[in-house]
Image (cartoon, rainbow, N blue to C red; front, side, top):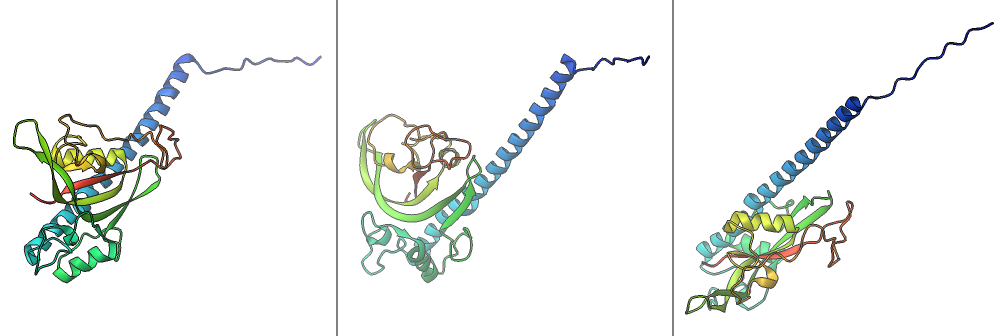
Length: 231
C-alpha cells in the first residue's frame, strides 16, 4: 500500500506582509519624490532662463533703443507697440529684439525663443508662451488703502499650470498672491480691491474644464500671468 505524505503549505506571516507593504510604500515614495524634484528643477530653470531672460531682454531693449519694444522712437508713447492692449508676440517680438541687437532666451529652440516646453504634474506636455503688452494695472492711490488703475508694460506668460504660477509668484514676490505684487493673474491685475486673492485654479482642474475633473491622465488646466516690466 502506497503511503501518502501530506505537506503543509506555508503562507506569509503578518510580519512578512507588513515588511513587503513598507518596501512598496518606500519605492512609491522614492519615485514620487524623484518626479517632484525633477519637475521643480525644470520649473526653477524656466524661472531663471526663460522668465528672467525675457525680463532682461525687455530692459536691454529699453536701455539700447530708449523705448519699449515696438514703440516709436520719434514719437514715443512709453507703451509696448505704441498702443494700449496691443500684444507683441512670436515673430514680431523676435524681430523687434533682432533689430535692437538684444539677445533673447533660448526658449524651446531656434525660432521658438518665445516658447518654453515642460511637463505638468501628470506628465503631459505643456507650452508657455511669452509676449509683451501694455495693459491696465492697479497701483496704490493717494490715500492709504485706496487703489487706482494705471497703464503698465507687462510680460504676458500663457500656459502656466497652477503649481508653476504659484511657484513663479513666490520667487518674484515672496508669496503666492494673485492680486498684489509684480506677478499677478491676468484677471486680477487691475483689481482695486484691498484683499489678497488666490490663484483661480488648482491642479485638480483638467484642461478645458472649470471644475475639479482632473484624472491621472488629464492635461492640467493652465493660467495666464502678468509680470510687471515697468518700475
